[in-house]
Length: 304
Length: 257
Ligand SMILES: Cc1cc2nc3c(=O)[nH]c(=O)nc-3n(C[C@H](O)[C@H](O)[C@H](O)COP(=O)(O)OP(=O)(O)OC[C@H]3O[C@@H](n4cnc5c(N)ncnc54)[C@H](O)[C@@H]3O)c2cc1C
Ligand SMILES: Cc1cc2nc3c(=O)[nH]c(=O)nc-3n(C[C@H](O)[C@H](O)[C@H](O)COP(=O)(O)O)c2cc1C
Ligand code: FES
Image (cartoon, rainbow over all chains, first blue to last red; front, side):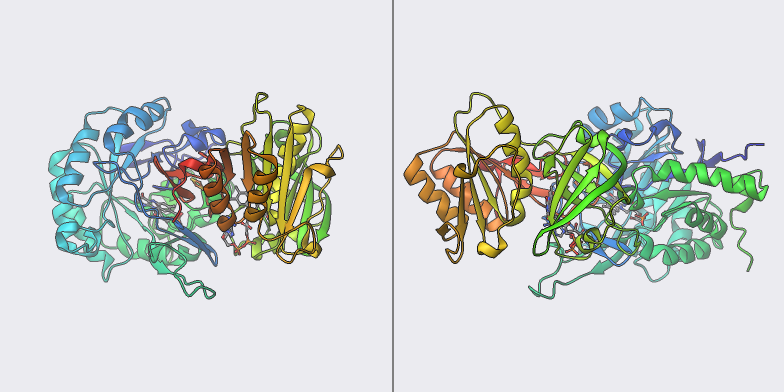
């Protein structure tokens, strides 16, 4: 019998638990050359802000051992253009679209959420709370439990769409933030966003990134992600979307065992543009071989 | 664009540290145009995760293409160790390519160092379309000259510049361009590829002389297909993706640092 890969996250029904990680898959258009977008569990778009944002100067990336640093700086055309261009394209596929939302103030997040809520093609919002809060001296929303709660509860009131809050690993106590956003009305959390990092060119003595620092992603961060998911899953009751360094189905299984109900693939798309579909196929095969009927049967099943 | 396997047919170190790889890959070879590139998985070693971009150097026939590359780091070192017969994961053809038109009476191709790679493909296309061109090639000295094959003999159209004057003109590629303009007047179009300082000067000279000029730019890439916004360069209309909006840009659009 075919194992059941269907999951429901934040009230969104997914045909399988494999999604794309924000910022690594554009709005799907470029990857539609390689994968049938209709076979994905969900498409999570790049970060969308209220107004067009130009992003950081290049160089924006630097490859590191088993990973990479990026400082794209949320380059995007703004929510209006996103709706008329990207969303129009994505609406053609039988796959839920989750829009990653970013902002510099609570009001900006709210406005973007309101605009997106008017469109049926949007099935959920993912709040990127790793953005700097300009009204709080640039400290990230996600690094302070009070900011994170205020942001989540305010956006919660502004939209009926399922709300996913994407947690930053660059915090002292991620459980506290996870619990905070759960109580503030989040329907699910996703983790982890990139880890803050830096690299220096020893010839020029200059930072490798024009932005000086960036976010580390890829296989290098996988154990950090697994540990954080495991820890967070012990303290919240809403579902977790796990991400951070997943490069094959074996990595994905670890995330389910640690407590994730769905997973997202980011940096690995760069190595293999068909990786998302390959993970879907291999997950199914794995469950079949193991005689496991439902993917949900392994969620959180790490034996401690 | 496709994601496929390309089989290594041959490998040659054409000059110190510069390698030529020939691939059997009909999906890409049949449709690639000069100036386009391929995004290549450079090794099975999972410690580096990103592909490396290389211009297509020559289209041998509808099944076979070549790349020409310089070993500069771990990706290119690993690529230089590939054995004949092995199959590499390749995405391509990528990018916009050079735009050539039949009404261009005289074209000037300018290469600095390994920048000769995509220009040989362009030269072959111009030759087969019977469009006139000259070529300026810059390198450090006569020992570093990268040999390349062209189907027809066009040696009398190629001018060299070396830093020490050991071959051709003594000076930089941009200095040779000034000398060329003095002697031959203005070409209709310039196509250039090479290190950034060279491109910057070529762009400046082209601008001052009102010559239409197209540059092949390089930036660090992750996806290679336009999705991640890693590879941007600054233009008059904002940041543009080198992989998808380029790698060929009109020199007059580029904003240099
Ligand atoms: C469109 C395009 C076409 C190119 N065509 C050729 C070609 O035909 N022949 C050739 O020899 N080289 C070419 N290059 C440059 C080539 O991609 C780099 O030399 C190569 O990526 C270096 O990899 P590495 O691992 O050996 O070096 P490392 O320095 O170890 O690489 C570290 C990281 O930086 C990136 N990187 C380093 N140098 C460059 C560069 N100059 N441009 C872009 N990314 C870089 C690498 O891809 C990698 O992600 C091209 C670059 C671009 C963007
Ligand atoms: C190039 C790049 C751009 C990203 N952009 C965003 C973004 O806009 N919003 C966001 O919430 N996360 C963004 N991320 C983080 C990823 O969605 C993901 O959380 C992280 O990279 C870890 O997963 P991975 O190791 O599978 O890439 C980005 C990551 C990369 C590599
Ligand atoms: S490398 Fe991803 S957009 Fe160019």
